[in-house]
Length: 162
Image 1 (cartoon, rainbow, N blue to C red):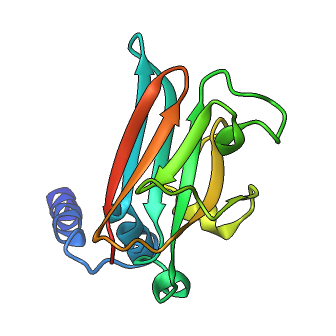
Image 2 (image 1 turned 180 degrees about the horizontal axis):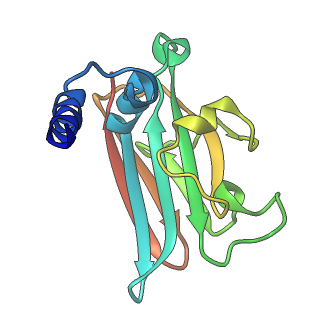
């Protein structure tokens, strides 16, 4: 009887992994799509990350941005030794500049902690600042976003325009 019980448990465990995905293990299609349109840029100094930017191109990810005449990005930025006052930290830091194909952003909107758009960010931490950044729709098939730091240099991200 004991061996029959153990055999039944082993059979249950062996065949239990062959079920369909549902519930907790269902992949989030929007998050997967967002991840494929996400790039990361880092600026180093003496092997330390001084500035880190993670950008997700939202136009091909979310339907509300898809047919728009502008390019929308969810951006998270971390700057080592950043300013504490909101008017000077993150993308408003006077030492930082951001351009796409040589053009400045049309709008930079800081996202609050409870903003649902922040859930698309692949990495979330309390040291980064999150923004919805809007650029003019590019004329070329390639979008090159350049993050520059006056002190540490620059880094470029490349996206395909959809």
